[in-house]
Image (cartoon, rainbow, N blue to C red; front, top):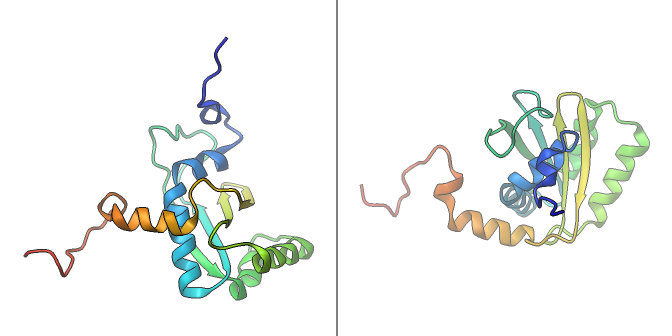
Length: 152
């Protein structure tokens, strides 16, 4: 019997893993861009449409908003999720020890689910994600603006 290499796509409980796999370059790009501009912090992703557990992630684009929050803004932001104080404290400790050039701290919120992931041992580090997205910007930019170096 041969097992499918895409089993994660069929596991409805693991929408977070599906999202990370589908949006990995965007996550790495945003994490590195945020770190360069604001220092240590965390990505916050909010799913903005549909039932995240029922979507066919291979064919449907799940709308989401992503932002990088600097470490100083994290405690007040996490209060809206009603996390216990000890979990917030552990997240703040993680922000002081994670390696921004090799790892990503990511909070995912969709429906009633809220999960924080510490992505380590990445096949593509955040600086490389950033480089790849910049090199392929037309594929990632949904609202293209003319560049100054383009002929008009």
